Length: 371
Image 1 (cartoon, helix red, strand yellow):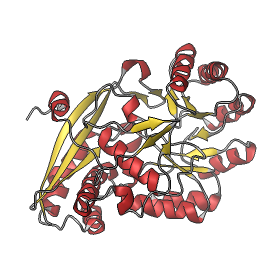
Image 2: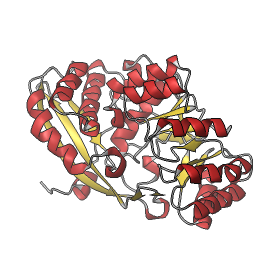
Image 3: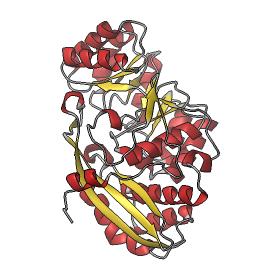
Image 4: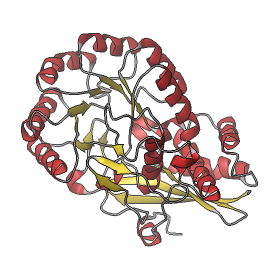
């Protein structure tokens, strides 16, 4: 089952204007991603997705495609597609970091493995521990706009809301108050500043956040120094979520040892995909730290991949719901399937491997190399 070819297709898929997320690191009008297709000599195809956001992942569409075409594809041609951990070691030896590029290839190899075994990935990884993965809706923008979006999200079945902050303390707190007023006191409400606040701003915000019944604070300020996060945890009862501080196994170890955060936001492509993610989940489980699946607002391939991970790992227990939300922020996707959504949770596809098929008409419309 040797690898015959690895193809990269750059795509720019517009994000729905009304729900487009405004975060501390900017506004993305489109998902500038890449579709990866790995083919074996036996005719099996696996799909991967490179889904970076440059300001915090350190990679972009062009860098992912460059490293895959220039380094990973030549090294992996002829490699047994089923020897996935070995393929990861090959890529790690060739190129430091660049985890989103590596993740896209590894994702496609797992898709192949599931198709060979004729089972969905959650069964390949030991079976489901839950039927669906709880998720939350993310709102941003002007306070009245964010409040309206939150109400509409609840109307279509969401049960948990996250507000983007980190854009200026006064307007951030106004946004939080508007959303809380719109959704009532019983709906869980968290915030995510994407490192946009200073430590001092975060401390000033705490009284308002506590008064508004905020259920988590995600990455309010820079990932360093770690002591600042620990001091924040000591200053409030609101659980702290690490996201931009959670890139690697080393990050997981130091965060677990410090007890600076209550929840890990695990984003598989940030870590290099599943091989590294399962190690991070092991650290989290050993430390009794619950996890959520973080996001760069993925398209359908990576979203399905994340849903399989969420369904098969005990760590994603819904303490804070995950961000497998890409299908709600794109009017059109590059796969033909949408994951089932009900009662605030998505169900991973049940077909073999990822369980998704490519929408070639959409890819033709969105690809930017026009080959």
